[in-house]
Image 1 (cartoon, rainbow, N blue to C red):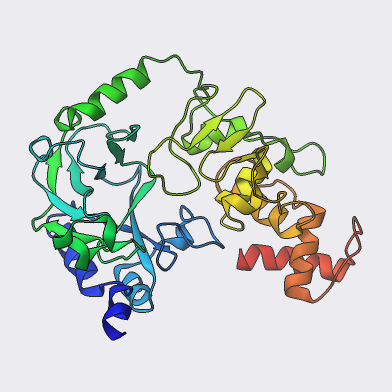
Image 2: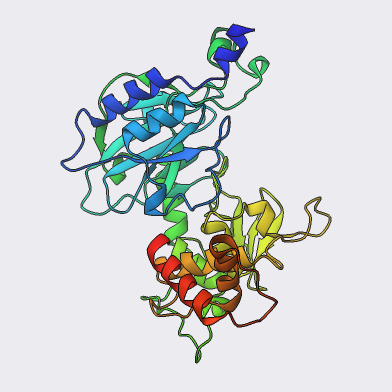
Length: 365
């Protein structure tokens, strides 16, 4: 029983070894962007968007979280030089991967390769159907030491002891890499992508509030695509902006103006998408189910907390102006949560509660 339990516990020392190798030749001022993933899972914890600065962990915080059973993710961002290359299923041959720090994935077949970008421009995110992904700009991979439940019978006999674990494979510091040094499958996929016409405005102007009403509900799924790095080509598949992706092809935008998650078979308008991005609800909880889906109706309906957290995310990420007014129902949520005051639907708050709510939002959030 003790051995079985050990197999399900993250290997903290493996994570520490990985981080030490990663930082051994890191660029000046680099700090890894580490995030909490659910225990035994590849998905970020709920409650706050992993892209929110408050969700970022220090190395010591990540170690502590792993010691309590949680998994860790590591992301490349637009502000650092880290390039994560996820090679799935043996399609990319070992000789195509420039030697660098690598991590063997839970299937014991895939590899995560970590590099420092040597180009003047950031290497782009590149998904493929089956070969894996390049994740360099606000996408993450599971860090070494993490454990995700995996049936040992699905891996080779010599790897069964490590089934489910992410372990350091090639023990060295990260190498540098240029775009041209990526495996050919990524170069070809990127060429196809850039040759496909796509309409993207040169700038995104925040939605303006009309009078005293918030602009939150004027935000569309199309706006979310543009702000979060999705694609607006109708029905083309691309990596999810909500969660990890095995194929890198589990989200799309449709002609009816909705985002679709093909992992959970549900769709989203702008407000629903922001609720997920805020971390307040999961993709499955906030989305509206596709026809014949086993999922229930969207849980954003009647949830004032969804309104508040979507509004807060929209404000923090430039969807709406900094002076956009807090929606009434969002104020009700804060009044109930922090002031022990429950208002009736559409009721204006008493002045003292109203002032308390504004102060709480300013100081706490």
